[in-house]
Length: 258
Image (tube, rainbow, N blue to C red; front, side):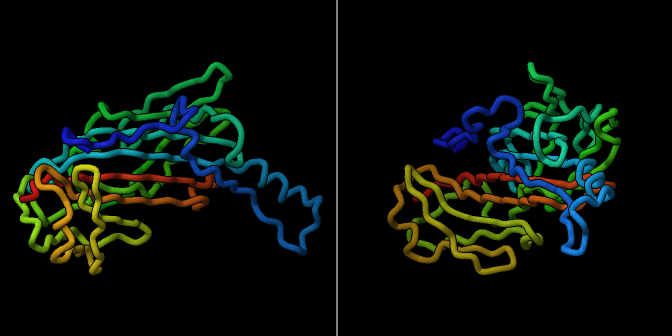
């Protein structure tokens, strides 16, 4: 990854607007209790009125200094409103992400989606520990105006190691970041020339590559790779809105193995 062998995050086959192949398609139909009759008109109306807000984020960046500044490699954020999590994307009016207007795209068949790319105003230019973001829409005849909070994978705040350090392969390497957040998943590895070594999770944001674990890697440029994930298939939102999010962030810390 980075300028020394990084792998960019690419949309899957058929991704045309906002990586639909990656979106978790979770339905949000209201479940009917065994005591309710199948012809319950109220339940049917509530079920047909339900909307799903789908949010998909994939991004990668490199830690460029010890103060948390980032160089963003790739970023793809997609948003779609769909009836019951099925069918074409609906018009939600103007949509913003943490106050930043998103680009509205309409397919030849009329499906509406929204996106932000790598070159949009900095939202990943600095590490941070708050995973919560706000998706707001102005509304349309199909989708009521709403403001929803979604939990997306942050670029974690790392206190150790600093970027561009020289690391002897014969020594232990420690990685320290702010303690993990609830319902946010982390993985840490050291990536060399075609090789990767996983770190051991010590808890509370502490990870280690023990003595001897790096001796098999080739000397030269390398990086610590921190992968962060969040997901929710059907979380409650405002009104009848259900929230479906999936996100993956990769943070690289460039190092040199001696």
